[in-house]
Length: 119
Image (cartoon, helix red, strand yellow):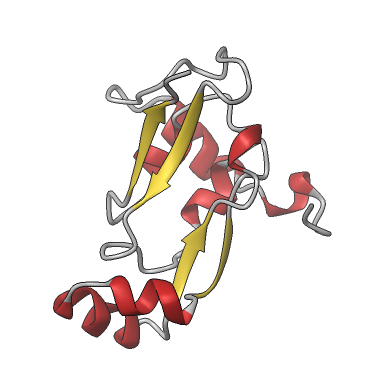
């Protein structure tokens, strides 16, 4: 788990704006854990931390992209990643997601999708 206090990392203005977004997907925090997972398109992600700042469940972290993940990027994805310091979002606590959809609408690059887990 993150050492950060979740209340300190949340940006209340961004949370409010994302919560009011008319195209917010998901279950508005009503899903059970492990029903949905956020998927990050690392070709699009610029590591701006909006996902971290709106997620009430501490699902995300933003850090340097792993070499293995960097090598999987497209040519343009690699250029973009280098331009932004090879920083990207990861979901180390994806199982905590309750599908509120805030991350999807807060991401300026539209790099996050919510995917329903098929059991």
